Length: 436
Image 1 (cartoon, rainbow, N blue to C red):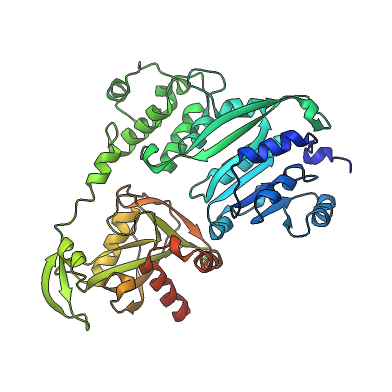
Image 2: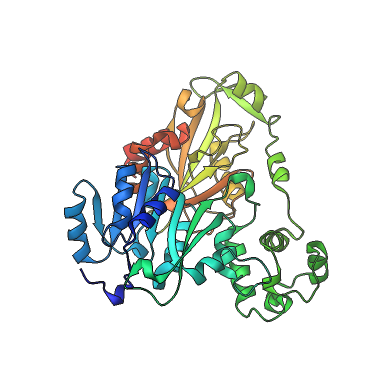
């Protein structure tokens, strides 16, 4: 079968190399995986042998039929990987992704699969060598730029090996490289406002030879204080700042000072002394107690959950912070929180929305859930709100978040209920039963 030039097809024909690439992915029996652009199936053959829990996306209709005949038990989707909705992968769990990417769409695919939030556990890609060098570049080099930082903030790269054009048919005129991309562990990620970081980096590198002070003039920053805190000259350019310094710059813009540390964010969760109303099965107040005493004694108390929807009807979910005392790193409602002593549900819901997501919006009551083990012994009232974002996610409360279609959420819950906080599962069940 002849490659199609317009699709940037270069088929890998070295079987030893194909097997080596799949081995580098770390695929184990039972692992979920996705191959992008399998072509003639050079990698697919070895991936299927490792795990049967995968599927592939191929844009070329001729190859789709060929692959379905060659791998009859494997799901082959006729689609464009640049249009693939990565959110669909959450229902499969952590997914390992591999592929020999066409050079002309590599950056687009990289941004799509590394955007927050992402269910990807690792990626093994064959890229143009120039792009691979940009991903792993160091400050003060010509390869270092916005791409390095925008993906590098939450992902780490390993340049595995360089490939000559001769291992492909037809042979490309440039060298390729194999890279491994993996998510940084939560403790390796310095907290900052992601959207603001992206905006600052893009603006700073839009004219990379100009001094950064001029490129960020619209922010009216105390440049002397900023550069002194970063330990750099006032004439610094974008390419001279490391990832950590760009994060510090972002936090300076956001908070007016050099960054709050992760430890500081963790300290914000010292809330055991909060006072809650203890209630009975009829939700009537009987006394008060500290948060710690309420949770330790499994005493009945009150809470609110808010489901935030965008104009497309997608639901925003948050992943709870690693520092939360209950259900850390579980996926949860858009916003949620306890009702403090002396306060009511209706006043608590908009407050929690503003505290956790940084936005104000009208809330509408959906329904109530009686206290039970799955709600953490909380009487819950569920509210809805409408907002498009972007949201300001408080690191002490939320690890990450994103909008999902209701169908995606339903499939995810069905296949992986353990990914979610129990209280959210109860709220989503109530929402479905109400038919809102």
